[in-house]
Length: 120
Image (tube, rainbow, N blue to C red; front, side, top):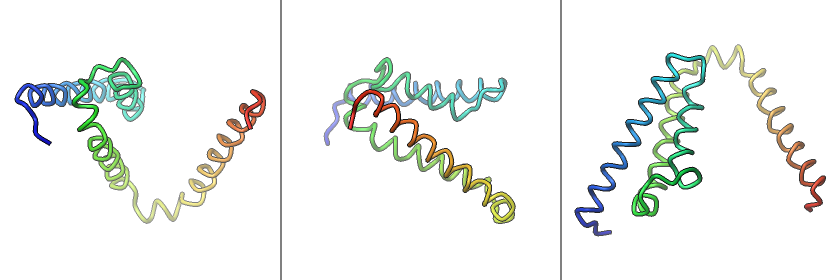
């Protein structure tokens, strides 16, 4: 992939803007009771193609999938850093049951809504 200098400037500006918005969302999350992860996800949704589509097309086509995987990996590492073996032994069974209950509950809710709408 060969990028023109205007494309590179656009990509760098988009990356800088995303980092700035992420820092602002993190700052808001640190000083309010709102969860920081939820604020970061909402910010990403708003600036991405599903929201206001504020990112340039060249960025979405070439860089967005890669950055999505990097961001998800970072979240996984950050969450994994906080989990210890002793905490998993103490709370693991409860976490497993709560997670399974949420998955089954979400599945049932979606299935019932689709059935109510007449979708197979």
